[in-house]
View (spheres, rainbow, N blue to C red):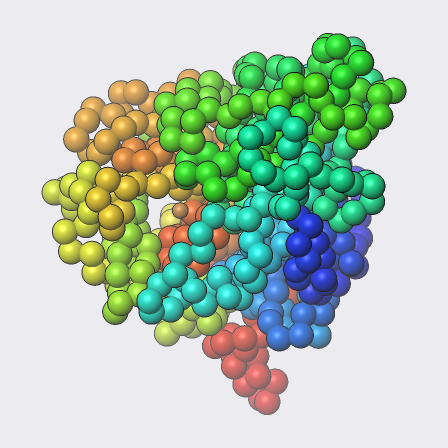
Length: 553
Ligand code: C2O
Ligand code: CU
């Protein structure tokens, strides 16, 4: 195994992700940030310098469990202090599992500002993937607003509350088209055909393939908001990996992908080789107000710019949730994958509700809306600092009488930053319970992401988990391992994991504006076992004061 070292500068840069110039958060002058490629067992070391002028920064390595290095998880207020402007912080961690991952900012709404990139872990030199392919490509999906992420944060955190609305563009590897369409000739709208030379910042990245080969497409979604559906016109897709875990291969025409998820799909270039084909992404689960993202699958030796002869694939209806459920229910762990323990030690029932606190609009879990403390939990728990966060644990469950089909009868909730302390090696169940939001007949989709772990997805259901005999439907035989999972409108999703990774781990909705207004919880696992936290991770808040005092002794 190797150590792969990188030196990164994070800075703002003028850029035109969709043909309209704006400002992006770039790494070493690149948007999206550079792709990291490594092999299983390698050590990654990123020396990150914050060249932003007025804000801190952190980077989270999404899907990497950070065993032994919880201080490198890159979550502000949880694993470390934000890196101040001008300062440098070194992230060092091992990538122990092959798969498709990505990284992104995890302070405020820096994902929406464009701070993200791909992280790909190949199998070790002497190992083989459980499937064959002749070549591979990588698509990092995101959504883009013309309003700055700072303005978005202010809109969300002010009275009156202003929602960020739908994105202006969908980006594939940071490229989208706002004022023109690659497929204008097939649509009735008045958007003009894109006239591109190909070297524009917003020109699509064209994927070049040879006929009659099999390719692996790695896709990850770093969207701030959007749920997406991906399709390759004319081609079937075989899904083989989910969130860095091998799954039982299954074949689909198109697939949903939510923020925080990653997949690998295989496709065979078995179509008429004299044409090119569309790769498209469309908005799902919210009424689409954003035109589809497009790129071209180019069969060599056709010109890459040759427009496919048929219109881009049509996505399922945005609110056809059954379609989404059918897709999810096809995902099983690959034969031979680890199985979940059959019993749990502690079960959480986490109800998400939309609430108001002192006139602000917030999301809450079991009636508590998460606000991050100024001292990172990892430091305050490790060093036994008592007044850094609420010492009272948030509730494990919610009232049995709560009617999930109606707006909250009392929408007032409270701010909080308490932690769920988990006992070592215990098996934890989480039931995510969705409910009606503030407005009647509204319940949204939420993709939940757990740091530090993969979890088994035991099941899904409609309605209130507690009122049915839901547990009998659990799959304990071949559930898939994932790190991000959706809870569907008015439904529940059940997960299981083993608390065996010392550290402090966020569990939150991966829709960035939802997390920003409180939609998350925090788990702590045997923090006393955590060793070698670099002091630089903790030089803020009460741990910062503690170090300053120590120096003066
Ligand atoms: Cu990719 Cu806490 O998030
Ligand atoms: Cu959400």
